[in-house]
Image 1 (tube, rainbow, N blue to C red):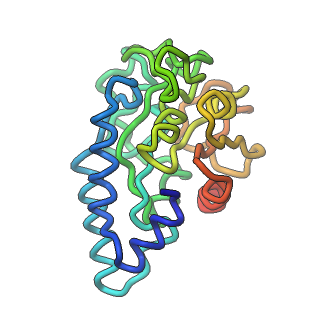
Image 2: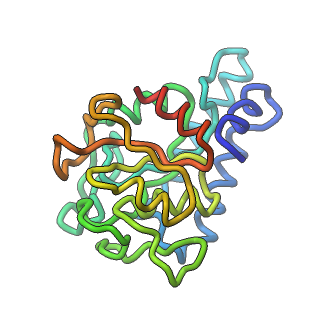
Image 3: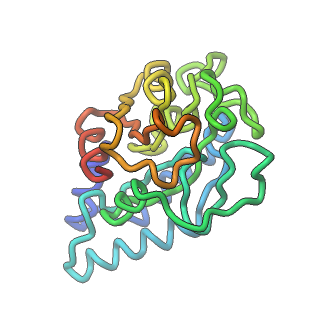
Length: 225
């Protein structure tokens, strides 16, 4: 289900954010062999879902992306959670703040369920060069999903989440989107803050969404910008 359809159902009270999040976590666990996630965030995601459901019950605005499960590339900071850029060099490192783009998504009700696999430090274009093992293409596990935002593209293509965040320096969002058959956007520089993104080439790096529809990509971009 697309992000905007899910958010509308949660805002109307016809679906609970907790049920949506639990469904996404179950799908992630069932597809573990694809190597999509480095770190799943069960406790965090369920706590956030309960907060969204409480806002709905109180007739308060839960946001444009209420209850929408999202995944984030492992080079984007999220306070209190691991930040390794798929490298053993940073194993055990915890982010001390949240990237601006992600903070804006969370403020609109989006819920992070996990951190996605990637080519180590963004240096790769096949999803094979991660300290946690390769990501596989959901359409055909014998094929590569592209990179370096391999896990984010695969998470969307596999139907685990409707929105995932990637980063693009020279194609690292657009190329895996193409390989996995989803929408991938590299915004113009400065459109979305790169504050909280581990740098590959800071004058070229951009955080961008991977989605199943252009409409979801547009909304995610608008929220982050």
